[in-house]
Every structure is written in C-alpha cells, then in structure tokens.
Length: 209
Ligand SMILES: CC(=O)SCCNC(=O)CCNC(=O)[C@H](O)C(C)(C)COP(=O)(O)OP(=O)(O)OC[C@H]1O[C@@H](n2cnc3c(N)ncnc32)[C@H](O)[C@@H]1OP(=O)(O)O
Image 1: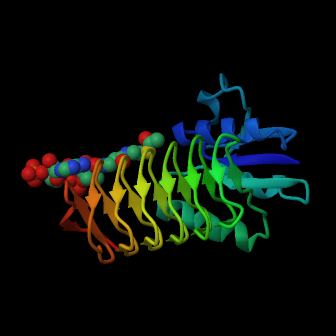
Image 2: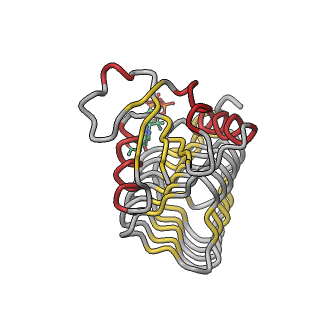
C-alpha cells in the first residue's frame, strides 16, 4: 500500500514520520505546490496536489496534511467525490482505547491518549501529547493542538481549533468553528464561531463563518 500525503509543510513532516513508524506503507510520497524546493525531503515530492487523481487506485491511500481546518475540509470533499480512500494514522506511541472511534483521515500523533467511548470525526488532528478523555464527541475537521487536555464528556463542534495547551473541564460544549488561544482554560460552553483566550477562557472575537 502506498501513501500519498497532500501538503509537505511542517505538519506534513509530522504526518509522514507517523506513517513511516506505522510500517504498513511500502511508499510514502508527498504532493505539494512547492515541489522544486523540497527535494531534500526523505519522502519524495512527486507532483502538485491537483495531480492527485493520477495516483488513485486500490493500493493507494491519501492523507490530507493541511493544518487549516476549512481548507482540509474542502480536500476531504474533493477526494471523497473522486472515491479516493483516506488513511487514518495513529502513531505507535499513542494510547487509543479500543472502545473509541476514530474517523477516516484523522491523525493521532505521538504520545496522545484517547480514552474509552470517545468518538473523533473525519480528518481531525489530535496533535502531540494531547489527552482526550472518556465519552468525548469530537466532530469532523477538529484540530486539538499539542498538549491539550480535554476532560470527560466534552463536545467539540466541526472545524474547531483548540490552541496549544488548552485545557477543557468535563462536560463542556464547544461549538463549531471555535478557536481557543494558547493556554486557554475552558470552564464553560463556547458558542459557534467564537475566539476565546485566557484563564479562564473568555470570548474576545467573533470568527468568520
Ligand atoms: C504543531 C503546531 O505548531 S500546532 C499550532 C499551535 N498554535 C497555536 O495553538 C496558536 C494559538 N494561537 C493563539 O493563541 C493566538 O494568540 C490567537 C489565535 C489567540 C490570536 O488571535 P488574534 O485574533 O490574532 O488575536 P490578537 O493577537 O490580535 O490578540 C487579541 C488579544 O488577545 C490576547 N491574546 C492573544 N492570544 C492569547 C492567548 N493565547 N492567551 C491570552 N491572551 C491572548 C492578545 O494579547 C490581545 O490582547 P489585547 O487586545 O489586550 O492586546
């Protein structure tokens, strides 16, 4: 099975290394706009993203290594319409409960813990060292940045981004397209399309839908 990763930026490197450590892909390639500048990579950059269909087939899995949640979502739509299959990548050092559900195209990075009866949607990023406790519902396209701790029974809506080191107490509901700042401590619900920062987290801005 070969893996074709769309996006060879910083996040792409983390994705490729995770895939390499999983040892189930015979080849790992990138598609990126910056093909000419990335020849030093250990994983070849074989074309631009818009050439993806050339690589589709039963022996190929795709992974979208784009940090922007909304842009990643557009790629999910494109690849799904083209019937391209997405890989789900789980770093060997991660602890993922067998009683949790992980959606297609999701990345679980090094030293992450996902506890029982938690579900993660399609094309989420659970970044390095994050903890997602029991009974959480994490919707599609959510990014949980490195070092976040999400307590039990938390809900996180579509395409939200929890900034690095965010802590969320149990039972909180975070809407869709929410962003939290680095180090935020979320003690109460956050509605859709809001940016919240600080300890405790307070909403400071509306985000574009
Ligand atoms: C592997 C990886 O690298 S994954 C990526 C990890 N990266 C992150 O998690 C980034 C998180 N980003 C942040 O925390 C940013 O500071 C953001 C998104 C909150 C900034 O949002 P912006 O809309 O640009 O806000 P801006 O910088 O104008 O700040 C607005 C106010 O919030 C304050 N503020 C910004 N970030 C924070 C924060 N994390 N905590 C507390 N206050 C903050 C600013 O000081 C400013 O206050 P002021 O109005 O009193 O001067």
